[in-house]
Image (cartoon, rainbow, N blue to C red):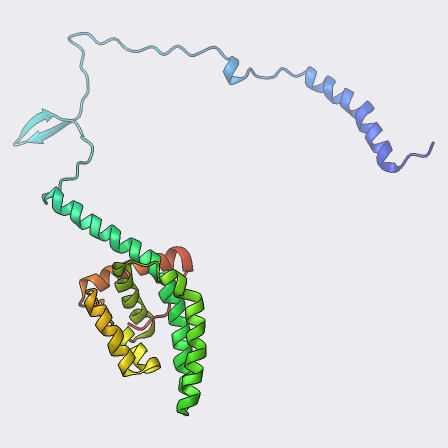
Length: 231
């Protein structure tokens, strides 16, 4: 019978080495397992009425007084109702930024690319043709998603688009669709209490600073690095 070299090694290990190892370990006494060891009896000292017991103390006005450290307690002197309103507004804004920032980021990339190409196109008809082609791209990518936004989320989105492109939405529409169309949509925004001409100024505007802090949070968590934006 022909056996390979690996077969001989296996037989050598199984029938020769294993019995020798078992005898070797049988001769050695193993320490008891921790679970099988007898429990150690802890002897607690019994204090009498005259024994000295050490406790923490502090010196107050030259007198030693027994003391005890308490856990940290945070005290806020504001109105709980005002705090609840603040956090409700902050949560609403944070949710709106989380929903709309990906759209503004993607749309900003497309719009910046459009502006770069328009700088190389001088003919009016060619510019309209190019803008129309890119408009179809934006519509197919964002129409279904943007139409589901609330008015409040739309306001935040317009601010974020300004942040990403350096231009407010009125200027963008005016450049791509003309002044009449921009004025028409501005009127619609006025009716719902908004405006296409929302500026982006985080240095002076409190709302913009809050949005910027949330955007930086999103960039750190999901994009790895801050997005390039006009500030």
